[in-house]
Image 1 (cartoon, one colour):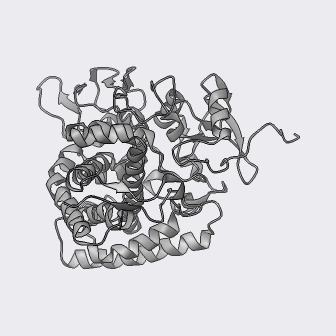
Image 2: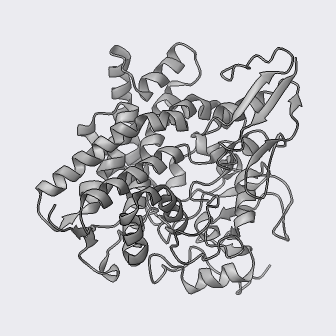
Image 3: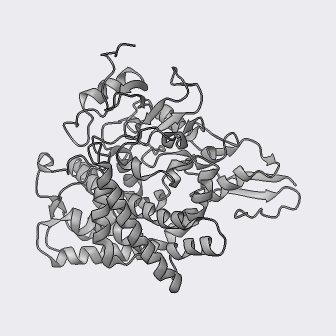
Amino acid sequence: MTWRVTVDAAVCIGSGVCAGTAPGRFSLDAAQRSAPARALTEPDERIRDAAFSCPVEAITLTDAVTEEPVPLDG
Amino acid sequence: MPADPDIPRFPFPPAPAPYDFGPEMRGTMAKCPVNKVKLPDDSMAWLVTGYSETREVFIDSRYSRALVFAPGRPLYGVEATLPGSMTAMDPPEHSRFRKLVATAFTDKRIQALRPAVARIVDDLIDKMIAGPRPADLSHEFSLMLPASVICLLLGVPISDVDKFHAWSNAMFGDWSRSQEEIGQAFAEMGGYMAGLIAAKRAEPADDLITLLINARDAEGKLSETELIQVPLQLLAAGHETTANSINMSFVALCQYPDELARLRANPDLIPTAVEELLRFVNIAGSSFVPLSRVTREDVCLGGVDIPAGETILPAFYVANRDPAVFATPDRLNLDNPPKTHLAFGAGAHHCLGAQLARMELQEAFRGLLTRLPNLRMTIPLSELEFRDGQAIASMRELPVTWDDV
């Protein structure tokens, strides 16, 4: 299974919760907006933690093949 | 090794004015974004005052919260109550707790609470209007609003809010506050919460404590001790912080009458103003030691080499005045372009209640500025009294008056 990780930059408030929760999996730009380090990844619990913990729910995880959402409370 | 007399002692002496830093902090931040300081027990720490360096400390996993609480390491003030709590953990362990409560604090949930918070604001203002002038904004409004909101969220009876005022006052002690005193307040709060949890087990309700009980009883996601600790931490964290943010923000606006007038004329500016106030206002007392970290490995921060095992103090309230990032750092300026300030920290420990605090501040100022004509302080800034030695800069009172409604 492969996950697609997306961050909605318009919703992101730059809290850095994702980068702190899942080290190396997210990067923050000069305006402190987050983006995934890799758009496609193997299932990764740290990324799931980050998506679940985002205060503005800006992170979406989907199955890259089926496009079904990945449950965050796993 | 002989003691270096050039290393300043921290915390620095109190600043001469509540919205400024003293000469020691000014000198330190001008010298370098990362400076060595000596703590009261003569141990060394690194005080971080630069914006990008402070963000790095908050976000980068090489700066650990868990190591602050390593066995044998001395703890100061309110930190002594925190071992075993989610602020004393690193991810991924920290994430287990954060996820238990994160859903209750997402922006979506918080926006749904806005009408209820607006009603609390209006009720408090109705009472102020019915009462005598001058009124004490701090006790009649600023403390009541966040206490009412966090009690509503958790499911704590509002009639017990006075108990929490007393306990949280004792807990937000400074370096001189005895561990026994802090420990006793914490134990009393624990006893109260255990009773409340037993009552809600018998009679579940639509609140955060019931949600946590289900997470323990049905899903085994936390222990009984943790079930008691998590709501207590939320109560403590969401209480005096927001109250003092409302007080200090109102006083700051009074020092900038042009900005206050703009805000009254155009309440649509309130969300922008709240962000600028969060950046500008420091709610921490002068003896506050920033939520420290310990280096997990050798690091280079702001060009300074720091070995593993050293104490790092990220002074976010100083970083919020970094001239490299903010155009007019020492002036409250609603035209400052929106930047991500550090009032809520950053990274895995970014304030869980950030969206709630923002919304409460917005609703507080909507109510105060639109319903109380020409609301103003009745004493000058220099006569405001702060309770000594608090980690949070609590005002004894904030006397205000307003024109007839």
